[in-house]
Structure formats: structure tokens, C-alpha cells
Image (cartoon, rainbow, N blue to C red; front, side, top):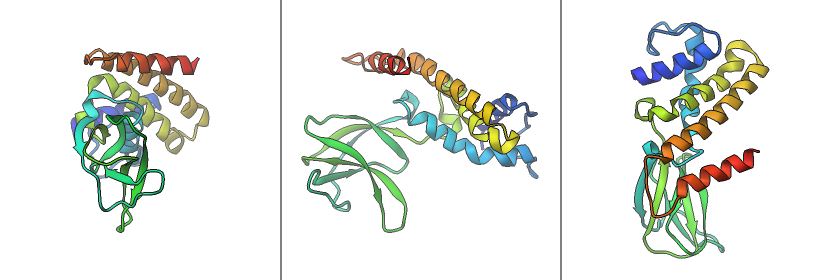
Length: 201
């Protein structure tokens, strides 16, 4: 794993009152590293899926899939690429919804079900590794990771709840910063941040 992964893990360990590690690739790994490392990628995914972070967006044109069965409400299906966590934007005036397709091999992929066919332009929030994350969301990942590891490492439910609140606050702060790095024809980022803040009050 990268140096970026080590920085995230050490940030979370410090929040839990634990000593940092020299590397996440230590062999043998100390107990605290064994307990926290399985939570790293799920913590990254949990932060990424909450917003259309610029470092995680891929812009795609999807074609209807013949592999995914439709239904009476949404007869057409589009398969998101492997690693997609969610759809962020969909350029389609008619109805659509996000779904999950379980393949024959047991794996799952995000799909978009639609009322009409034809090519469709979308943006997807994609799974990213630690070294691909923008600096503005690293604090949110640190607190999310610490919240997930609080019980395995320290057994403290109270500390886990405190860290969860810090993670949510860090996500909101990061949204404001991320939104300053793009300009579209409509104030998508500012409006969505404002809506989220209003919901939190």
C-alpha cells in the first residue's frame, strides 16, 4: 500500500490514542494495524459515496445492456463500470432509478434502470485507493476510519459516536472546498451543500 494509506491509518490511530505505525506494510503487523487495516477501504468508500467528489468522478456514455433483465416499470438497464459506487449525474429527462445487479458469479454491480433506451450520459462516483484522494477529503476519511475501528481497538461505543459526528462534519467541510474547484452552468455543488446543511439542522 502507499504512503497515503499509512498517513490515513496513522491519523485514525492517533484519534484512538494509539501509536502510529511506520508503514501499513509492516511484517509482522502489530495488533492495532491488524485491527484497523480491514476498515480502510470501506471507510474510503463510505466517504466517497456521500458526494460527487471531483477526484472520484468518471464521466461516461453508457449503452443499454442485454445482460440485465428489465422490469415493467424500467424495461431498459445500463451497467455501471466495475468499481462504481453510485451514479452522481444522469442526463435523462424520463424516469430512471439506481439498482444493483447480482451477476451469475455472485458479484454485484451498480446498474441504472430507465424507462427509455439509447445512449445515456452519466457521471459515476468510482472507488478510489488512498493515493488517489484529494487532500480536502482526507480528514473525513481519517475520522470515518477511526469511527469504524474504535470498537475493535478500544471497545468504546462513546468514542465511536463522537468520531462519527466528526466524520460527518468533516464531510460537510470538504464539500464546500471541493465545490470551489469546478464551475458548471448551474450551481450544483453549492445548492447540494446548502440542502445538506439545512437537513442537518
